Image (tube, rainbow, N blue to C red; front, side, top):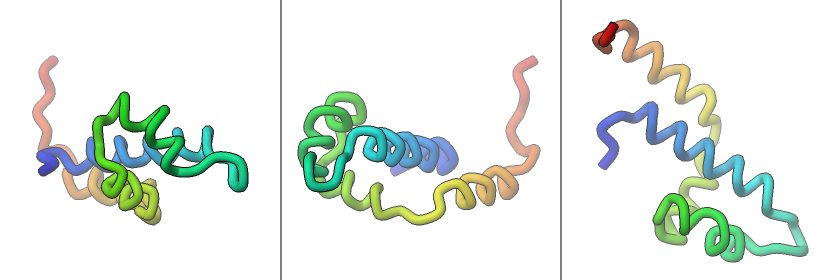
Length: 77
């Protein structure tokens, strides 16, 4: 689905950060965070949201992909 893996991983990282910001264990639910903050912005299903939250070590994966891509991207200016 994702053409650019780096952008997909960065979006996953943003979703995890929003969840960390608004999820309070014992007070809020993940379904509530998804319904109020995630779904209106990212338009993903609840099941996909749960998979994204479970993604480990996104920072390392982003660095790996950027190194793998290297200097292959053309610059406009």
